[in-house]
Amino acid sequence: MITIKSPSRLHLTLIDMNARLGRVDGGAGITLSSPNIMIRAERSDTIDVAGESTLRERIVNAVEKLLPEGEGIHIQLSEDMPPHVGFGSGTQSALSAAAAVNELYGLGKSVRELAIAVGRGGTSGIGVASFEMGGFIVDGGHRFAEKGSFSPSSASRAAPAPVLFRHDFPEWDIVLALPESPGAHDAREVDIFQKECPIPINEVQELSHLMLMKMMPAIMEKDIEAFGYCINHIQNIGFKKREIQLQHKVVRDVMTLMQDNGAYGAGMSSFGPAVYGILDNKEDAAYLQEDVQELLDRTIGGRVIITKANNAGAEIRSS
Image 1 (cartoon, rainbow, N blue to C red):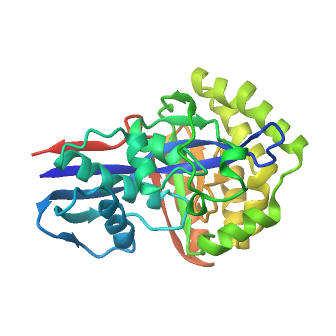
Image 2: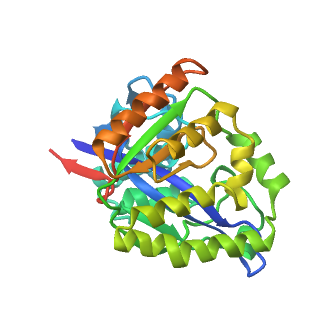
């Protein structure tokens, strides 16, 4: 029996959606301690996935790509995370299933090889790296000539991007809000990439400067004020600015409330609607959680939790 606990992640921003220098994408993200996907798997004569989940089809597709001919697997899904909200559920569910096959049948594949096999990481490398190592991650994107277009991971067959920087995320609290508003995915996500890209080069340059000379040092020096400044600034430039403009007003209101009520920085993960705020005081985090929950309760609904970073990646145990 193999048990795999796979973490969610925040995708802070895509860095270069202009591609003038010959590369595209690039991104930054934070691996989260919750929510998670947890599966238990064992060898079987057939492919069987037990447990109610919208991720079931992704899990089945992943194991079918990895299973040796004539072999099967039984998977029990015991913990789940919602799809298309900014947590990276597609990558985590596919990698969890692939890793289960890899362990049970001794395939000896690396996380990167598993990601290529199941077709994940074609735009953002954050989810794959979060599974493998956790922490705060910056990836270097892809050669534009090889990828060939501005497109989301769901429409890209590029290999996972190289990790340029990985560092433990400090013990800061993360208030995580999940408004009941649909996030972009599939055909709509593809349309947004095609409509909004290329992003003006001056915005890409500004974002790159911010990432290299303020955000990454802030992580290393545990400077929450500098890190929060970067998070707030990111929401107003580049591709992230375009993503936020497409959101329900309440999603933007949640970010503003967080920024005005204790969070050093607040932003939206990926295409949303998940919104996060960074704090360094548990009491302040609890008060902010209450304030945001009250806003959601009287508007579009949703839930709010307090979490922290995961600096280890996925847990894989055998029994």
